[in-house]
Length: 183
Ligand SMILES: CC(C)(COP(=O)(O)OP(=O)(O)OC[C@H]1O[C@@H](n2cnc3c(N)ncnc32)[C@H](O)[C@@H]1OP(=O)(O)O)[C@@H](O)C(=O)NCCC(=O)NCCS
Image (tube, rainbow, N blue to C red; front, top):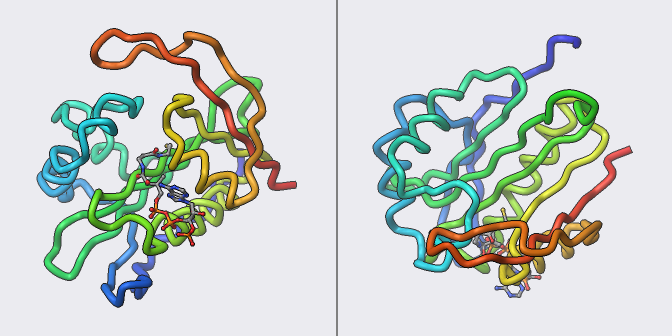
């Protein structure tokens, strides 16, 4: 596989309510701020997101992978230094190595002001750098806000896996796979 480029230059973006964020690649030093971010997420996010952002081991796995070749992760940092958004794109192994999965989560008090769209744009560019032809995002059927933003960005529901996900309370949920073909 050809060596892929990294897009690590921080970008400042003004959101619809006038607040500014810096969008930049995640770094190992973000571990503590990512833990605070994870613990600030609303209860339903904690229940439904595949990665448990309230688990310090999961956060450590993300920040430790800051330089991973097949994985790009970005954070949105507020002016006070707190992390208010996270996104990642990770190339899949084996026969799906032309496909990457996407993850996107925005802090509760930073939603509906365009930050998700900004991070999604960043992640599309990173997916191109990873030279993938297709991106997918998996979510529970109940995650309607997630479905709205990705359909707004041109993704289509490609499939439903019935009772495929188990939340942290043990309840089973249908999982949707949304996809977007880059080429
Ligand atoms: C989904 C999520 C990332 C959206 O982030 P956001 O910063 O609020 O998104 P934006 O402000 O850029 O919204 C872009 C568009 O998506 C749609 N949208 C986003 N949230 C929506 C909601 N709750 N209801 C309806 N439409 C919504 C709208 O069309 C919106 O455009 P508009 O505000 O001009 O109407 C955020 O709600 C979140 O983190 N949810 C929990 C995690 C999750 O479900 N992630 C997706 C699976 S990985």
